[in-house]
Image (tube, rainbow, N blue to C red; front, side, top):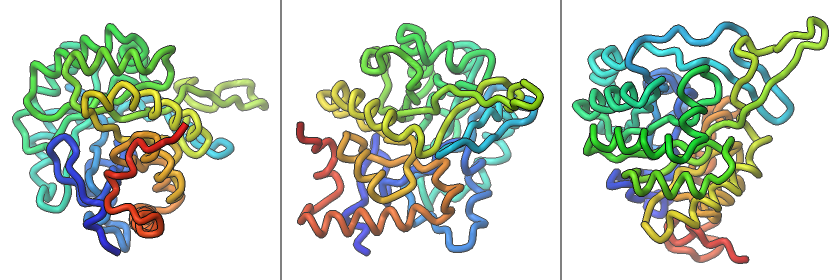
Length: 309
């Protein structure tokens, strides 16, 4: 397989392939390397687990529930806190193998800015701002569903770092394109589109919510059509500014990945799909190269945003 067709620059970071392993699905960048057959050569970047300023224990159980063609999760940003991540976890990562992206979360704008400042002083390659988490009771959705609030968070984080900022957009909002515009004006260098959709499940025997947090984030193939539309809408705003997008939401096949690229994504996020197939990255890379060869397309970048309508 010729990976030269897949390598590209994303916000100044050199990606070996367009695959990005998504936050919350691969821990802090070390756990997943224990999977037999996994190689960092097959991916462009890893988004580390969502990190807040102070340690969090997360939500009460149950936290994960399988649904038709998807999964609900409400982990609640369980993490050891930003200082622990920066001082103890990052030094153990090999930054020569792939790019590592921090995922910043918070309950206040000030917390977002402070966690961003801590990562700015670390070897992390870029910072993803999680303004769209649907499974915490404070922050998260409150910020991500309000374009003005989203812009204020991005602006505060922009002032706290010179590293690339990737804003993770919520699909649970009225006008995602307007939110993207505001975030670009506030200083976002890229977007991750989209985060999970809000959902719930009910135990009919007990008449109680299955998820301890009542609601959680729905991911997996069930959300792909929605995610595709959102990427297309965000791309309409981003293309004039040269702003790249990590397209994500239900990618489990090569064709899924190709759809996101054609819709306007420069990179492909894998999350729930990794639970279906831990070695999915390698298969998607091979499939993309085969598609490029078949259609006599020189490089992946020539396919981005080529939707014809």
